[in-house]
Length: 193
Image (cartoon, rainbow, N blue to C red; front, top):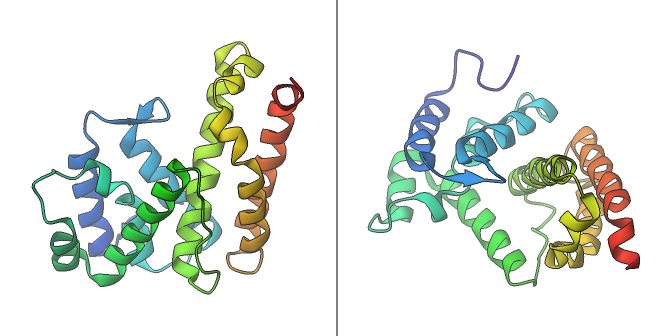
């Protein structure tokens, strides 16, 4: 059973409807963007089954700043439709994504359990997807050699994982550790070249 099994909280139902609209025709990691959003939500629920519905809604909409209509007052929309906590989590994820894009990554405050949960699940899903795509590429070393900025972030991801140990469920921190071990093995040849 997943976090999406009925009955769903109204905020989750509404977030899923909006995510379907905004993600339509968009991709993340070579898959429909909605697939990524749903996997983040499911990962959160797998590791914390009693998670607040607001966190699930934020997981579904965490890429909203990129996908929402440009003319929309996103903060107003999120506050009115989903509440301040969902908006705060989405903006927190946006800040983290923007910092990573600038190669200036930051770790959220470990005391912010909701944001750490969401951020950790997002990393697990994204990095698993990256490893899957590398495997399908036919040349894992070449795949990662074209992604030097990602390789420069491996130390940050490891620091993030160590920080997550006491901030998220142990199983989720362990899932991130596992994917980072797999990523280190997959990129070992690139790092030496």
